[in-house]
Each structure stands twice: as C-alpha cells, then as structure tokens.
Image (tube, rainbow, N blue to C red):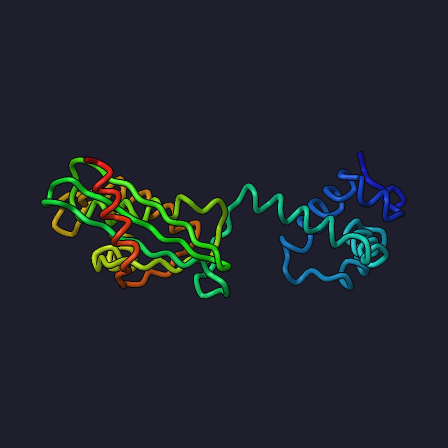
Length: 227
C-alpha cells in the first residue's frame, strides 16, 4: 500500500511506524539516490514535485530533531546481520598477546592469550596432548579472536614469524590454490588457517611479531594442565 507523507506527520508516528521508514527510505532513497549517484533533490523536484524521493527528504527535514535515534536503530540492525570489518588503525584497539609452547615437536603443546582493552585484561590458556609448535601458535590466535563477540579493531602480537607472514603475504595465494602452497603441497594445519582467515576478515587484524612473557607463561600453564 502506498505510504502518504501525512501518514508519518508527527514525531510519535515516525518513531512507531516501521512501514513509513521502510517505504520512504528503502523504496524512494534506494531506487533513486543509490541507483543513480547523481540524482539530487533538485533533479527530483524538476521531474516530479510529488515524487516519493522529494517527499522523503521533506519529511526528513521536518522531523530531523526526532529521527536520529531511529536511524541509529536501523544502522545497528544492519550491523547485527552484516559484520563490518574495521581498520586496526582505529583508536582503542583490542591488544592481544599470544604465546605457544610444545614439549617435543610434535608432542604435548600449550597456548596462552592475554587480551586487553579499556584497562581490562582477560587471560586464556589451554593445551593438547599431541601437537606442534605451529599448531599451538595458530590455536592461540584463533582462540583470542573467537573470544571477541563483535567486530573490533585488533592489534595481535605473536612470536611466530610464520603467522605474521602467512596472514599478510601468503594467505590469499593459498586460498586461490585451494589451500595449497606454491609447490602444490597442502598447507599444514589448513583448518586452523582457514578459521584464522575467517576471523581476521571480521576484525581486520593488525599483525605484529613480538613475544610476551605472560602469554608464554600461560602457554606453559596450559601444557601443565595436561598432566
């Protein structure tokens, strides 16, 4: 059913009428402005003074003091279904330190994580009876990013040069070749690499090669917990 501008003439009606918001915004604005970036209010008025595009902007101007909350709700709803990557250069990133250890390679392994943001710190650790140092380093990074419940800027420190190089230089090539290296051999720990790549796409992590004493201690604790 067509929506009249009179249907949402007051701030209260605008707040409660989802049909008005969806029709006027998604139908009028999307069909005109987004489909044709050069489309303007002026050109719309020239074509049809009563077109829904003009009506939408007239309503926006009339109710501008009241609709910011509603627009934020629409934006939050969109973000809840589409996780927008964020730049790791933004202010206030989650700072993550990871550590890994392996008694024998392969052998019993442990991983440790320290997450810090806004003055709050969280520590994680774990281990497995049969692993490699590379697997534990990957596991630490995966566990750290899985702990984040929403997209955030992240600065992740790892003492593994291979993880930093893998995520910044090699991963795109591996994906294009079906998770195989240039020599055709399968990438070791491919499932962990794939999971790490998925998480990094959400958070757009800044990768830093650096060790961390507490993360290493946590990895050792994770290994000892296996005893």
